[in-house]
Image 1 (tube, rainbow, N blue to C red):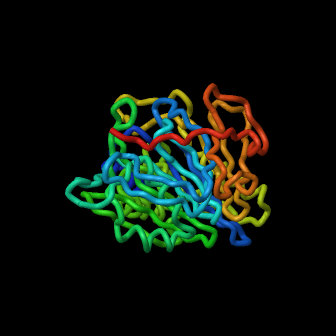
Image 2 (cartoon, rainbow, N blue to C red; image 1 turned 45 degrees about the vertical axis):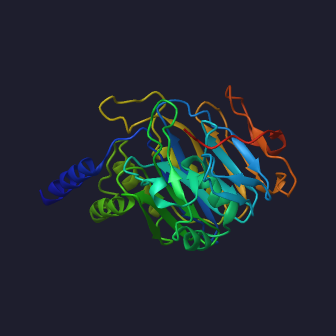
Image 3 (cartoon, rainbow, N blue to C red; image 1 turned 135 degrees about the vertical axis):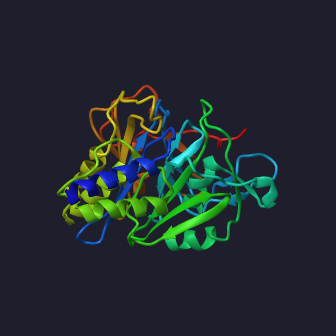
Length: 347
């Protein structure tokens, strides 16, 4: 009777802490037996976000994308990026081995950018700024905690609030979660932060998961598509999955974890707009600089070897166009075509 009560208590807490949003992604960080680190994530969205892949060389002149007052920088590191509506970098990895993932967070509040009197950065360029400028999680956290810019967050196509939080990981296994709450930047920095979903904010995700850890995933795990339930399942499965040094098995293990918390294509719940179909999955092998990509409509996985991209100064940005859902497999770095880079989300 006590166990049953605990189950329902945890389920009730999960429901109470779950907030609505348009996106329902999940990110996990897996460490192999030989201390390589692999990031897996799902991209869940109610419509096709028209994602393409990009290579961006070091030495690129950049700006925040929102007109006068935008922050300016020159990229120190080349990177591979996955975009979102050709208006934002949703995730990526740079040549130094820093991996960045943006996930939707309905509670995100960036504050009034004009009141801050800081240089401005489109939320669409937030992830790219980090990829361009930092080699490690520690470097990024040290610089970003000084808040060198103010985020400008216009609505996404369709009028959806552009709200997100960021996960960082590097080749040492370090990890950090960055969120803007109530206009203030909140940073959770610790290698133990290996799972992130959407709502609620990360500190509440940790508190919520403690209920399920006490119950034990071999006895009972929540099974809905809500963010809080996906966090509990992903965390338990990640900790239960053997840490192997066979890279092929490790990649397959991470894919199996993110497939387990994916939302079937076409599933939607009008009463729960935070539930959306999984549009694609990715796995980032930090040590080997390999980025695996699995669109839901593609019958096979393909991948990019970052070391084969043209990332030297003077190289042109290049795009792997995924419009029309081309059937791709194997290593595809030779299919990137020089293309003018997309512009960050603006008014």
